[in-house]
Length: 84
Image: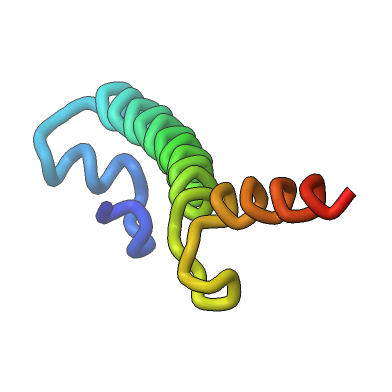
């Protein structure tokens, strides 16, 4: 926005042919939109983390003999119980 480049609100409003109060209103609305966008980004990050955790539970891992952690745990429990 032009105001960020050192111009006053008054000069920007005059250049656009609008009132200073309308320009202030637009600036406040833009800040609110930015806050909404930041909130949405945070929600999307949380959702991505959740999806990655769900994926990792069923994803095959080379360190587990190319089986999912759930399958590895199930097989491990069965093996240890059969030894008892």
